Length: 300
Image: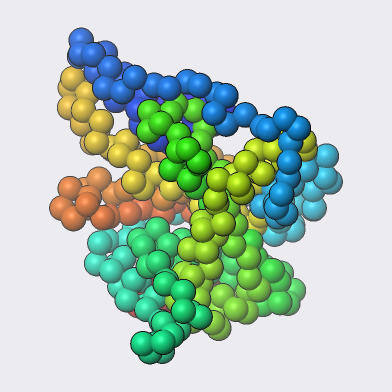
């Protein structure tokens, strides 16, 4: 089966609810989840109040850079010929990344990160690895001095005050960002890259989310960065129980965008360890060779 949806109507969690209900109706069963469609929960304030700078967003009337720039719209299809590859990580590989992310020096007073607790999650370490490889594979003069900006989506249901219903059906994700010079990604400790990925999500409070929604009401913009990591990893699309059984494969359709990197579960690996992962990358040939080399070197 194939599905095409609009993100204005569905985010990933809402789509999972839709599939659960679709499978239940196909089996003459009641809805698994009664969806909440109350869009007023995420409407802009009146009048809108933008209380934060939103570097992760670009006004819709802002001229875009040239196609050769590292900061074109992440949703822009590229005219370049692209290679498509899937990089696989097992549960053991992800455990290795978590070990690499441990701070190099720690003490009782200082965990190596200014006293802040470093969140070493599977998503954070995989995204940090992808960011490092993607930024350093870009072909540009003085690339190490270039600023690289990573984007990824955060579910805001539990971050709102009051929280949204878990049954909220709509688009309840917003974009967060992390930015660093490429030389920091190359020469700095991996734990610092993981920390920057983690810190991006901590900005997403109720007030920050409301400010971003109000910004969108005023400027009608779109995500602004070098590339976006879109994670289907923990959505559970592969766990939907249809009348004829669970999917034998569940994956996104390849599209001609080099600035969106997709994470999705490896069903065969997940059945054994609940942690296998596929990373779908699309890049021009020379950049793909560099990305693959960096990826393999770091995982060696």
